[in-house]
Image (cartoon, rainbow, N blue to C red; front, side, top):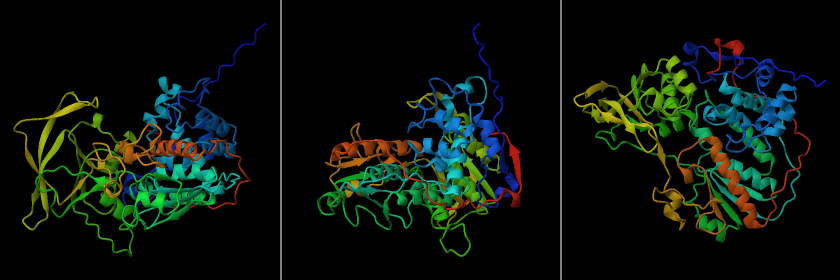
Length: 499
């Protein structure tokens, strides 16, 4: 008699997670969403049906074996789960927090066809946080090969490329323009979404691989890309400088005092510690703040302003809530925190208070027309709907452009938008020089930048004649200790179901 198949019943709902109460969290920069407990993680891992052909892994830009690491969690083998993730993803604690999983791995999860998809991102964060707390790091046996590799930029693309090249045996140096490494992970994302302690821990793991970080070094000013190859002895160079040059609307009044980019606001707050007492970094926060845009950066800027003491914070966006590019969770958290949203509204001028400052904006109502090239319905102005909106600080968060310094100081080829031009292998027009991440594609996600860094590393290894072999890992290193800065027992928090 044939054996009957065992049908496993999986929990219909995601495991609950803790959140700080909105009224409490707007007064601090601790993380909003708490991490899974071991019991919650094991329960959520049990929701994975272990598909024979998982759709989630192809949805991940770096190809993490998602089924593999979740099965390890379900078996209570957390070190094994960490080993599986770090075969392809250097930054699990980072990506578990900031990746748009709903559009990538979770969006492809088969469980999501009938129920809420498996909370892959929160499981990844749980593993990454456990690794930091336990001091785990996968340090391979590395045999030096004599090649010297330079990385320009210490953001996610540069970090991923640096790790792969160091594991291959290269002498890797990362040059960073700011005074501490981390790139956009450090200056562009507030602590309540990604604590600096997590970024620090991941950078320490890179240093264990032998990667050297040289900060306060603006490539293109102190030396050029050509000089790195021709005079400084680098056999290959990767450019991962991101796209942090802010865009403005070009409307009347956008050069007034009291108008700043979201990048400037977040950099002063996150990296220059304007949010902390004892630091004199200037950061004007008005009583009534208007933020133009509805992406993740806009959400970060609004929520930072709220925490820094703004009485009112308003989002001005020319499309509807459905078209907002920010993650659903970020919009949800902003709404909980009292951010006022003005959908289908566009600014047409920023108004002068007579002293060179801001007294408000002139706005116009919009309606959605036919889809544009991006597939979203194009906003169309409603005639006769202009009105004035009072505010004393305007933050512009409508996107970024490539920083022009490297293009201006080297002979590297650029595309028509000013980004670095590359071929499919991410090779630039200069021999031995590769580029990837936002400086090539324009603004994208952390995980896509990491994927580009790894793609470039494979190409660089081929260029240097190195084999792209599997890594052999040594014994785990001693603990570093957990440094997350938030104890839920000391703060009010609420239990919510994952969004």
